[in-house]
Image (cartoon, rainbow, N blue to C red; front, side, top):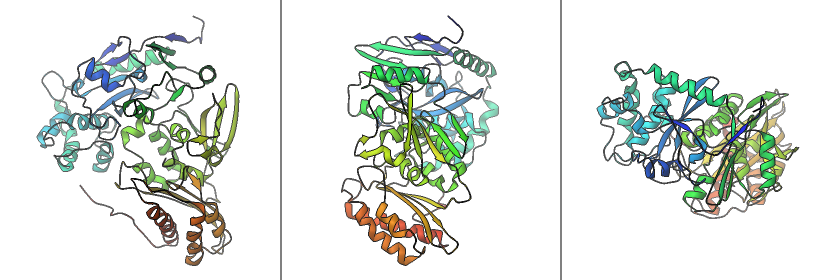
Length: 494
């Protein structure tokens, strides 16, 4: 093999309990949960919802990031087995050392944090990822780490207490430095031997190229292929809709697609960057989007899903888009060797219709960095549950004022109000040049009726959506003129 040449593998290998594990041939759309339960007989990983909502199937996947091991809690029910190639997997069965429980497990026992036990393995694994990544985590960090785990009989107080107490048992648990060294050594060796992946079984194929060029070639060869990033949406096509997906092309191994860069006044987030990493970068520049970050699904979903996937999917209730629209984000598309860039708002044409040619894909999203002219940015999400729920309405506002408190520019966008995430052009026009005060905002609220004709569905009625859309604009006025307005009780302790 010549220097720089990349081989093609036809099987996957990952670390499991300190050993390299290569599964026998399997269907490319096999989920990790099904493989664990039906082939490895690891019954500790449970199936609850099969859509990444309940956390009963939580496992931990480890890989290398900047030379260190990164542990991420993921939902096995929608994670495809093929994506584990070159990584390490931990299940609840992996944690016990002989007859001694892991500190996480012992803390859950001592805090009486389990009753029926069905959800407990998922809680164990979410806490294990936190234990490995964050020494002495705060109660808030513990709560955030458990955002994807549901319990219906114990109650969360003793589980949170177990998360606080688990660090107290660290001294009594054997610190297996040899196992950690072996893990790092193996993952490093695998990372230094990059290879494309091609799995074929029963007429279906899974491709994982290693470069943008090879990804572009594959998409031109298979223009009807399904692009796979985090599988947080595609996984549901498999588990809930039972779709036939003959060709899956993964972004998992493409060099450069996991990069976040800043240059020339732009924050550029490549297509395979996780939602968690992407939001951390965005919030570092725009702190007012912190609540959107924390309420965007659960941590395991944000660990797996990607911002590029959320944008490319184009759901009318995708929570990232309204904020990106008002910030003036742009996306770069690629087909073959050709690239083009367009404003995000021009990408969405109609419900499930995008300005995307066959064989073309989203390569990156570019977000302007704040500057001296950056105005007042807010984003609000309304849903039935405060956390881990789909929006009924998501609204983003970004206006600039002159020295006389008049609106020089207004950018307003909503999700959940139309078949696509969409800017409110009539509302923006009603505000432009007007004083930033109650009278002009009242007129702009009325103008929203010309921007949207929302529908009624299981999440909200059309009337409710319109009223909420108007009232969120009023809330934005009150907040940005000095009056504190809260939609929810804050500071509540479990």
